Image (cartoon, rainbow, N blue to C red; front, side, top):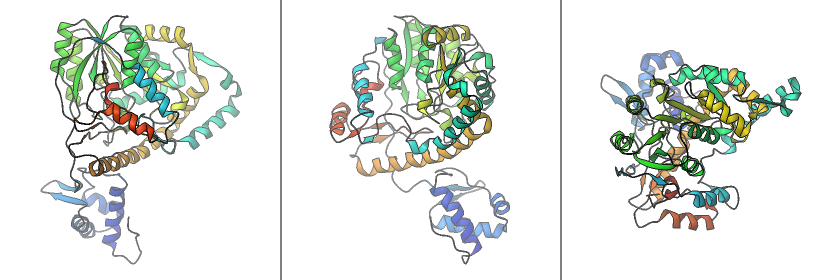
Length: 449
């Protein structure tokens, strides 16, 4: 951003202020910038000054005017790569066989790599370590016994109250007594699967999907039936209904907001249609929402749970992707299945770390969490744009790339001649880890990236 000078014309100082916000990701391509009157009030300048500022930004290629609508951030001139292809292929229930490659990836991520691009964890500079450590010190002074104690399932009531309070922003109205605190989202997912299904049962999943979803199904001796998902619009509901009709599906796992790895946010209409479809077949939905708070949209996206009228949706989330994977805290919400989930939590791991529960509860209550998330979303969006532009510039012709609506995961589809597993091993030799496509498929079959 250019340095502003007090000697610059007033319109230019206004223009450069907005230019800086665009560069830093506060406004993304396609977003409407403040109206002329809004910016006039904000900067306490005349309408004509703001118009001059907008004409200057327009001349520089930052914004464009749309008739009877206002000014919008212009799409970057860099040519966008095409989106990953959608392949609507019906699959049959199959055992999951991805553990060996995933185990190798996890070992590599925490071992012999210098550049880790293969695991969906934010860098330390994206975590609010200073704020969390300050809260830990305060709580340790105030309640020294907390670090040596634990609270049995369903977990800390203050934290459950904060989660219930936040549910309003999800379009829901949770009660604290329907929330169970877990040791991260993976435990939450496992508890949900054990609640609704048994070994040998069939679970439907999106394809591609997060590999820990597949590992959970595999570890519990269940089978998966894959439902192809488009990188912009999500799962194919017709193929899902085909599976519901033809196989005894006990549950469907969906990442409805900021999907991992495709990045889409499912539209509200499709969330409603998904819930209604599953309700017709009396099939439970396990909704994974670990990235929901990292959506790039001004308003936090709703949960599919907000359309649930039958109690068939079990919602899982965690704080690992937003504030700290080390705190090991997640949660599950369900009215219908709460008692079973809380009991399974009790006999599986008894409790979650009490100190972690107290720290997160205070961070939520103080407003620190919301301030952190607002800030880090902008940085993640800028990061996604920068990586996407680098891929467009340096990767082979024919490369396709997702356009995430939130989070920090990119799905890259390489030309057919490139095997992602071979690329994974080659990159590892250079100290770089990536996630090859087969680990996102139940059968481990070769899929584009």
